[in-house]
Image 1 (tube, rainbow, N blue to C red):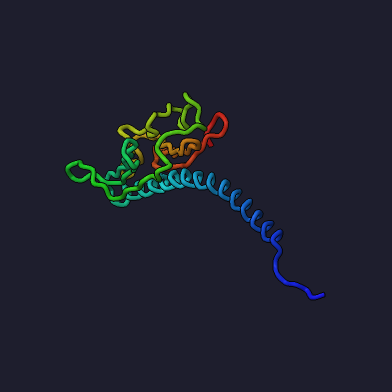
Image 2 (image 1 turned 30 degrees about the vertical axis):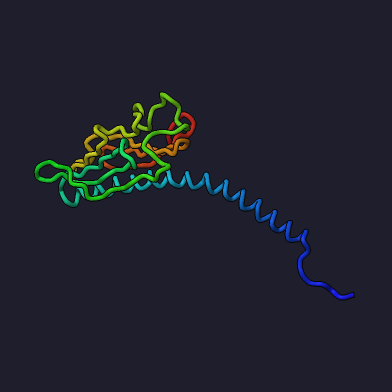
Length: 176
């Protein structure tokens, strides 16, 4: 009896079903991971910009500002300097992804305190006038926190008086 080569319809259906299951599963897993990555990326980028602003203040021996705009659309922050007249001159802009915003998500209960022990503002920025002021050889005028969320997950960037920053997340009743 001659041997036939090829695939039966049952084999083709089994392969298609396996591919469909793997695709559906990866879509679900990667979709959630993508949102997590966007929130973490926003917080990490902000932390890097804090380091950049601190370095600029030291190198140029000038006051450098980071100004957050939580009420704008899209939400952005600018790094810039003060000119001789005291006007803000922006030099770098970062824009939040459309699914990420300043503020806190569902993982932070109402009335919870931030990593600095202070209250969490509705706009997600604890600095006066949403502005971080870096003075040469002095650090930050006031320490504070900037919060980023996608609605369900929150990251906080704690900026110390020396101008260093650390990214934190809410774990249980505290921040790590």
